[in-house]
Length: 358
Image (tube, rainbow, N blue to C red; front, side, top):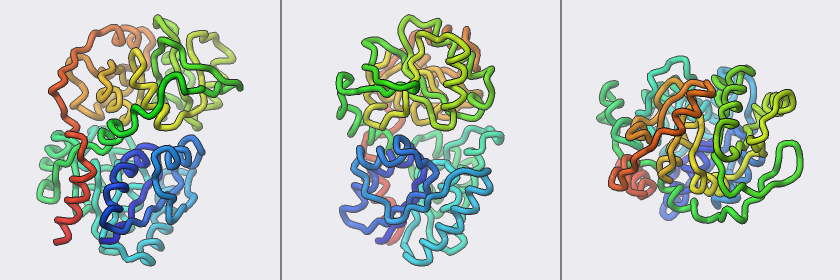
């Protein structure tokens, strides 16, 4: 088979790493990078660390409104599909890259396989939710990472196209999370210079528009870090860099360590060794869960209901006191509870593609 895989953002690079390695054992893969994440630490570093083959096409498309970005991507991806005439288009997750590729392929009658299908937050104000729904409804093969995702497909009448295969991010975490030692990590400070990772620390990631588009919410999150009993390591997303720098210059946050974005190997190591996690990332919630780390998620909707048990992951408003209080809640970890699969989802994804072509 000939498969065109389209990626554009950090979580997709991680999933593609494990699936592409399995796919290329028997099939031809054409890898397309839209350019949605273009910063070295958000893109090229991941390709190097995870040994992902260089993209066959790098479209260099980023910036602009959601519609502008999606439209430019559709035009460019259509050209690739017309040239390559693949048996499948393979897409991951819920980014603008995912939607653009799925729409372009569907209009050309190229079968679409959507990995991480069925995920729903039921929040139509969340732009990724629109991407998920539209991608699922134009896809030929829907591969769910969790039982809840498969159940959501059934509610929308999509179950006949769906399979439960597990989460390739879990495969990746098992494969890569032990490849860095904490002592090997040098953090690059946002204001210049380097720092070793503190012996004890909390790990923060925060990038969503809901939390970073104004000073108030981000200040509350920063203030929460000052109530904790250890420093907080915060790799700052490029879109939030100027605001984060300005706030830390006008306010004092001695327990907050602002650093440049880190690669996947470093991030996975930081997750595994942190005391607890604060995030607004759907991916990092899962990584915290895989690592058995207590997580507080600064969102008003549930991304992964499987994680919301036994205090393992709790939603929280961007309010300092509430964040600090929920971090104190003790979690219970049941090692036999494995809602994200058995670590072999990449093999199941490839088999599903093969079986669907028979």
